[in-house]
Amino acid sequence: MISNLYSGGILDAAAAIPPAHRLERPQASAKKVSRVCGSEVEVDLVLENGVVADFGMTAKACALGQASASIVAQNIRGAGVEELYRVRDDMRAMLKENGPPPSGERWQGLAMLEAVRDYPQRHTSTMLVFDAVCDCLDQIGSTR
Image 1: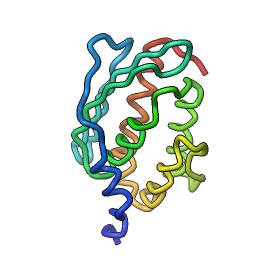
Image 2: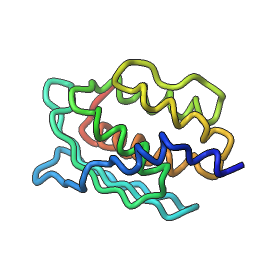
Image 3: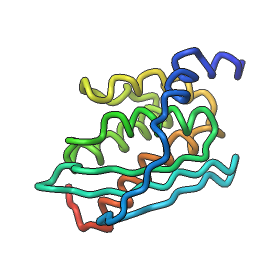
């Protein structure tokens, strides 16, 4: 039942999304949109010495897109390039291949999104922020 998908934890995470904030001079920006529901997330990124030094984001998304964007926004500063690609890949595997949630203390809140795997039509909105962050990393020329 889809009402089970919108657990208190997911709604709490969505409500805790930081206020919209864009960077004046990002190294890269990326916008991702879900064609299914119209959710969109736009991120700005600045790296210093291979880690995220600054992050800006606007999210006009459903509760699932907002929840994942909120968790990322609250935890991304200080994360390394390889870590961010791995989190994106782990999220995709969790949703599409029955994999475990991303590991590490920084990303433990993402485990609440495990229930999304049973709703393939919701995968894209949940992945928007991860895909946008990795698009920015690609633009900057970061490698794994």
